[in-house]
Image (cartoon, rainbow, N blue to C red; front, side, top):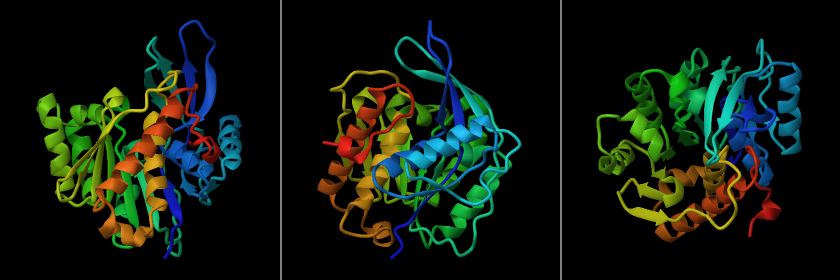
Length: 307
């Protein structure tokens, strides 16, 4: 079976601003961070993205090449490379302001990946978002689909409109990762105690597993049969910032899935049935995210750095 990985979504430059420091221009973007995380773990993902052949674009190209990420042909045809102004507060948390251009380059019909991952701006920002959703809903029967809404309220607009689209992605996915902050933004009418009930509701629509990240409180996985697995956060190391933490966790989930004794095609039915395996996958993803937050920017670990 085909175990190739296709990642769809934004590649951009984070202009990182820390109190008292000069701004830094660092490659980022949720989709690219996941692809880079997978590349550093030994895979060779294809990234379908949208950037320009300009100075910022060349930073992205070099960064991806270093980590073994290949671009889908046509990904470098944008008029300008997207930027995200990332203001880091004293606790290391980032707040983003975007200047984004997003389209989906044509995906060849003969490209048949075993796993497709998408989310965040690439899934929601137009005009490309409509094409991404159509592609995901079309390929869901052939490929294992992983999705992370990674909500950006500043650019995604009305939560109700975003929620309607995100729920379609969830129903078409096999693995969903979502933060408690994302759920709170998407469903402002529900209480904090009801957020996990909403994650259970998502699991009932199709995914084999829905993972909710809870910040310093770790993560919770909910299977389609509504069994739960909890794993604590990895807090053993120092905290530089949280940039790219969720993307590294997502890459860690895909890595754990790829390391199982079944391929992506079988994972559509088998993933989440073995709770001990699911616990181990979550724990490893937490370790990967813990390494990322210990250093500045979206800088996920290489395979040799894992314990």
